[in-house]
Image (cartoon, rainbow, N blue to C red; front, side, top):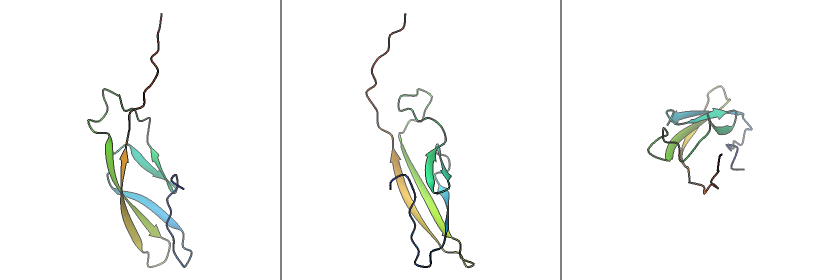
Length: 88
């Protein structure tokens, strides 16, 4: 499922997730989901110069001697051809 983080553990632990690198990006973790912290607009003149974001996310299990793993992801915004609007 691309919308949910997936961490597996043979001892059936629960997991927490945190962004450990790329916290200056417009993303946040909510439970086990990576979410945008607001609308993302490729054509926003006040937006970032780049439309590619690199994030490192840590998954930590709930064991007493907690173990964790980190993975780096790249999120790329692409332009969408939007129909023009006319106002009178």
